[in-house]
Image 1: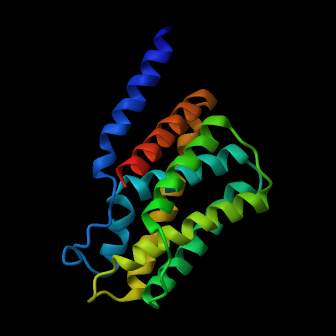
Image 2 (image 1 turned 30 degrees about the horizontal axis):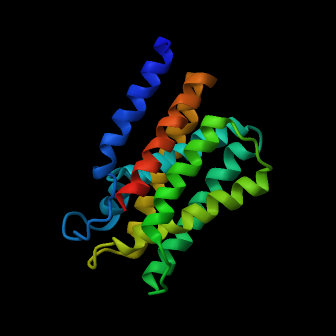
Length: 192
């Protein structure tokens, strides 16, 4: 086995070890409220963190119009997901969808899959609906929905930007990061 394969195996195993800390959906609503709570929520779990960075990485791989359209579709649909949660409308299998988003986006990055911009937007929006729903469910009762939503949307835009800037590390390195993200998604699925 060459040294590159050893480092990949090590990186994937290390990421999988963090799967137990991935869920930001603890049900503890008393810690932070309002804008700061919304801003912090996407940063508190690997499911949100990795999916949102992955959207930026994948959008950068797609290039062209997808660079802004895919993240914009994600942010818009995420806001809609938050509204669904606040309205009491139930979405099934939210945690499974979050884990699948990490797995699928990681695989798309690792394999450098090129999609039509509209198809990429639909995929991003589908996953974002569940991420926004999870954010909405976690909103503290005392929080303003508008301020909370503004917080999680700004954090998401930031994380998409981290992914876009991160894509500058080079094609092969981005593919390895994608493989690590996919491995984390797989670990999240098995942890459910």
